[in-house]
Length: 598
Image (cartoon, rainbow, N blue to C red; front, side, top):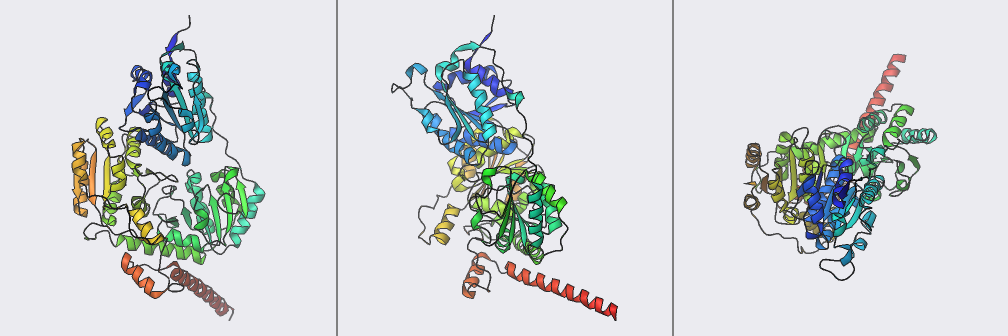
């Protein structure tokens, strides 16, 4: 006789078979059967009760970004379902696999204007690559299984809407999932003809650079080898920070508004870009428009998407970089290569000069100096958007053994707390830090309650400067308008945190921050450190005024004064020095030969 199981228990069995051991959500009457199944299977799948469904969806997206494995969340019918959307859009736009289970009123009450009933499926049409309402209880495990397959295959959000009565219904316990039939895709080998063409173009270039994204995250060694052999500075997308160690000399950081100066200047000076596994929407605006492009990507639809390609190579990043390295001859240092290394040192020295600043309110450099020293080699950072992201990109000396996530192309505020919860659930033995501005922290600050409920020791750092800093800078520098709607009320976030059961600290100096970090080691509670930060905006690389060769000296003087940038020099200076040094070396060598002949 065939054994039976509830529809919701069958769903969890399929999810568990795919290696999922926790689910984020918030109970509601329409999801009672799901909660019953979670109770029944609590030894296999942990339920994490977030304080808002948006946080659950963001945490599920963070799960996928941290681990590569599918994140799972749920919401109840109506408002609970709609609350999921923001987190699901983050997963969609950053292209990570997430399964969202959306509860629905009983099938007999659908489409008759029932309590909390709505036509949910159309609401998820845009965000989901798979969006289905289950039509029979018996089909539940099959639909969930296919949803997970589709989420992995298409790297996106799968939404399954489940009428309440189907979750309670008894169905045959006979379904076998497809989890064990999944095959890792084969690495696509590059076309050797195109590799030879690319090598010739690189050899002929005067100032080639590598511009890589997350598509090259498994090619760390290959990136360094290609850089060293062909003397190409390395520039990453923002999200690819951490693929290389920050202190690797030829790594210039990212490029764009949040980037450090060396990456921005290298991008505009290059005459050839080796574009590897990168889909940044702004990328075509961030490089010398006359530069030639060799693009490597594993997806054909990405080739030429962001910039015209001179050579397009459909291949796995690691395999293509290996082939380029093998096919090419080692180059001598180019002036751009030497200049970029000197420019990075100038930038790093300038940032380091503020490490022990006693300015009040405190600058970000002293705070990040402590973080760089205290965070372990296995630390995980959950980084919110805005000025916090700028400071993290520039001031954290990331190691490839560490992890970090943010909301990338979607860039939603409120990311850091749910992402930190995800990190601590996935990696309980790692030190986890959430970093956010006071505006972003306020959006989902209630998730400190989630951290407290599940005894998650997370160090949450709030950079309080009483403004939406990134927007303030846009209004000032881009649209040149009066500041409007960016001011925030002064808030004692340490007291707020203590009211939620966490340990709270308010700090105004580097020494106080160091003491708070030390005290955080002596508690198992979540910790909130409210850093009263300077109102000064981060150095702008988007509107940089430093080069007298083509910029007005009065504007340069004003810019330098505003950003305390007296020690910074434009890349052009280092290029002149590098060219002069190479000329002198050649002249000297020729002189040596002449003397030898005499």
